[in-house]
Length: 227
Image (tube, rainbow, N blue to C red):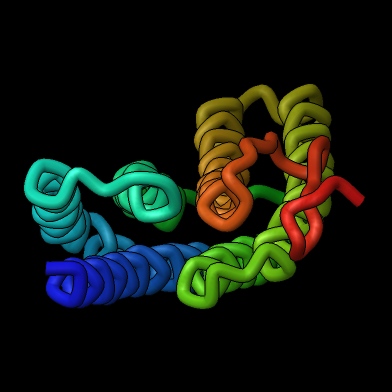
């Protein structure tokens, strides 16, 4: 029975990775649509959101089945309960991608705002954070998880800068308030995508160490200790 349970855990991990790959692809497409102002690509992201939701339900059902059949304890129980949380986070990452795409679809039909916003820079960081978070899960690597937590500060700073730029823009361009507000919402969703990556990283650290943390405020090293 133990061998069968181990195999089930490996299959669960594989399913999680496939789901994560779909979410990462959605974020990549959404950010590409943003930088290119491509409404058609944005629509593809919106339409791909439902299959990701369906996959999330299947993974959750598998987790609940393993809990009921094997009644795992210690590290195995920690792994499965964390997978349930990571699975939900990945699905919400897909929702964020769809929300970004909806703003892109709207803004692509409007004249560009006369303000330089570094969407390409923040987009690269968001993609890198999510990719590293998934790699941290694959390898159960605290070091990679901590890298994600470190990067979140940079994204937060970029988000605050863009927000400030847009607030200043509104002061001098009251006729474009709606477009600026839509852009602010878009920036907020980019920041939320980064937060979803940190959520995954925190769960990886919990799986490995059994200790809960909150972003970069309470890091643990690769041995599960505070530096």
